[in-house]
Image (tube, rainbow, N blue to C red; front, side):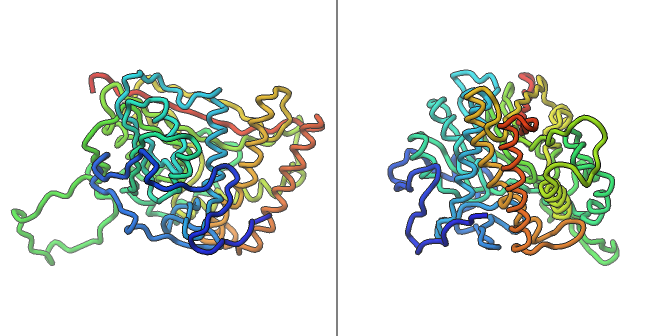
Length: 426
């Protein structure tokens, strides 16, 4: 796989595939005011500690996807997400959301905003609304705004995962044998975390003998419940591409519900690579198409389980929203072609973009998980992983060419949106 040229000297600007060079923040109408969303856990850029592994930069010690690292001009992930944003918009035929927002909408939150493409586009579409984009790491927001146009977005740094990863990693790993990654992607989390006590702390405390402590209860202050504690409610909270971000989705959706105004909407969007089409009849597992791709996908899922943050779009199961109190829960599925095998010209365009995203997603998704946690068999080296990625990319490319020739059935990615509404009487 072509990893591109080495980073340039500090202060230089790397060429972008999908965006012009950065401009000065002074040209932007956006803000980074801590007061805008008033989260009690707002960070500053000085709080960030980047981790550098295998030539990529990560926002913390646990999250599996890389981020932008501007001192070294590492914009590969931002460029990938820029293309991905275009695909989401194409899939909705130019729309940014499936919710029924009023022109009078005042406050919109993009949770896990990344480079901020959706937030900027929404701010331009709803110029009278306050749009807030929150992420746990810094991105090249100036380039996003230069690409999509000036707007007023408030950017916040905040790690909203106040619950942490699944504690019982051994239990997660033990359950891998019972989970079929290729057929159970539409189910609710098959490794549902143990039910937490209603008022339990986010992390278990050490056992302590009662006799060993003398506590004056009158001096103790109540511990705040883990949560986000925004002081102002939102009318729309949007999440996109958030698989693997949180473990305890029950708590996440409950927190989203609390953070919405009555009648407000939550919208979650994500996608999975669909099953590679198979011919009719019984199939020899050793003769299935794209064997390296299937192997890497299985290893990816196993590594995510071992990391304590399982991947998959199970977190979009309607029951999560319903249990949190949401009504009007609706889902939308859109198949997006991978490659240019479709007859419709618009579908060929989106398929070309999707193929590029698939090719670039291999390294972004696999590198940290397999070299840090490994699959059920081993911890991978970066070199052997990159060699397998190259083979998988060749398999995907060859399949897409054969699909264009009508020799095999075309392959699609499954894009999904799910929305829910907070009751007007809540």
